[in-house]
Amino acid sequence: MLAADSGSVLRLVEIEGRGRALVASQPLKAGQIVLQDSPIVVYSAFPLVKPQSSASYCDNCFRILSSSANVVPCPLCSHHLFCGPNCLTAATASSHSPWVCQALSRLRDCPSLFSQPLEQQVQARFLIAAYNLALVSPSDFQVLLSLQGQYSPSDAPAAEFLHSLILSVCPPPSLPISIELTAALLAKDKLNAFGLMEPISLQQDGERSVRAYGIYPKASFFNHDCLPNACRFDYLDSAPAQNTDMIVRMIHDVPVGREICLSYFPVNLNYSARQKRLTEDYGFTCNCDRCKVEANWSDNEADVVDDNGTVEENEDEEIMEEDNDEQMVASEGDEVGEADFPHAYFFVRYMCNRENCWGTLAPLPPSNDVQSKVLECNACGNHKSEEDMC
Image (tube, rainbow, N blue to C red; front, side, top):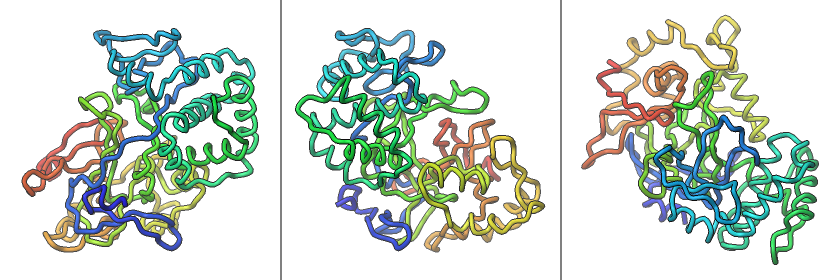
């Protein structure tokens, strides 16, 4: 079970109204790593024909390909690049098998696909990766099918088009596929895929793009909260090995039995923008403590919101930290929950203040059971000491 795989710090439970969830099976400390998960599927977030202005990434580990990298092209095509012979060898045996290479090449030459929205090109990439997973790792394919995500009639046109296209252009060898299977896979992808972001140095107009999507079977059990108590980190361009792994760390202390939640998007979004995104992308409305408060705000009480639907802190909220600092920060051993962290305090303490970053801060992992006084941003990687917040 997941608890054993995670060092018994997390336990998988059913919560009424929320479904499957992860809760703390022991008291957890700020900065503590509670999960390191490897993806069962990773696929590019770019259209089949990438814009020339976009950065280049390894088609196996998705590291950025620098000018000094030992770039190795796929021997079967001219479209896929790898950061070295090791990645090429690993990909050829798994994610970039000869069938995958052939299928993606044929789809690139398919006019009917390019008359569809760009999103369907990325969905086609996912389906090729998913069908390939069934061929190279049937057990992982069954894990993928076990994840949450139900077929919606509104997704029928895309499922029918992509299913027909793949069957006619590049059917997977020795794998019977049906429209029901295709629709089910697209539903799993929509609900469970995590975006692996491009470096913040490449963001344009304050927006970071996604370089790849990954499906992480254990991390998929984390539910959403608009004031999360944990956040995810990935180190695509810096980790020496297993660089596509997701690492989840605690933002602050929580007691045993508390549900551990991530935010599915940057925490700076305002109430209406958050609800719209959750409804459209995940099929639910949020009723967390923060949303209960903000839903009752009048227009005069609401935060100032910019054109992107993001919250701009006002002076009254910033003053809250000074007035309530002693009340908000629990002493060691006290139970600390989301209700103890009003959003204004959360913004001041746990949101990165780098311009246009909007990342979430969490302490570095404890050393010898001593909590770190340095917080790391999960978006830009900047470090911030507790002294800087005083």
